[in-house]
Image (cartoon, rainbow, N blue to C red; front, side, top):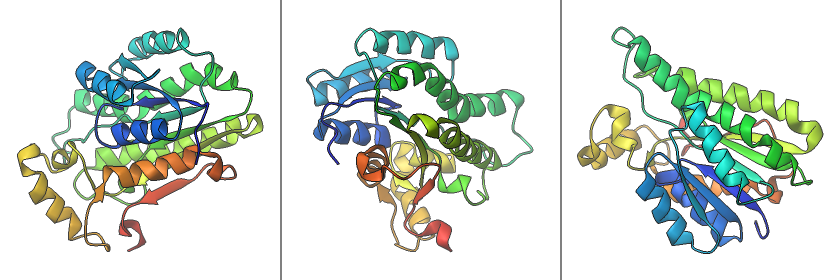
Length: 252
């Protein structure tokens, strides 16, 4: 899955799945632009990659910030081959106590961010002259119900619908669009899905592992490898697919 000569943009690339994907793409030869809300995290990943990697800071749920970041990237590269829309956040549980502000922030971060980053980067993707690959991060909770957080399921199911529609819309241009659907993954966000802080990561991981047929949560690199496959020429005939990487969770 060589990425030699390709340019990739990784949104939410400062930690977890995004970080491992950025590193994996760079290891295979891609030039990577890392976007993250956390300036230090984005810069650390870009420094870890070295070479022509660049770091960019933005709240991807705010379109004006996306426009600024895309302008920065456009000043550095003349095309983009790969876009990984990985921005997301855990959501509050239940429905009765969800405020309009929480609902809107969830939609902005989990859904609007990928829509508008795709819109804004499409001109650069089209300039590659060889199609391209866009991968969204959805979730197993976008394929099957989340008992605890309907709001999260709403946004992640929306990501899958968006990826399918864009796949059909962009297929005549040779631009493939897919959505990776992780199950539970050991990242800094894992405990947040149970509304706990990172001190409870092991406890939450054990709880999730008990519900997964493979009996464990994923490592972030395992999800990253699936993303890199979908982004690569090895997946040249795959588009419009919600791709579970979940230890068998949705097969139950």
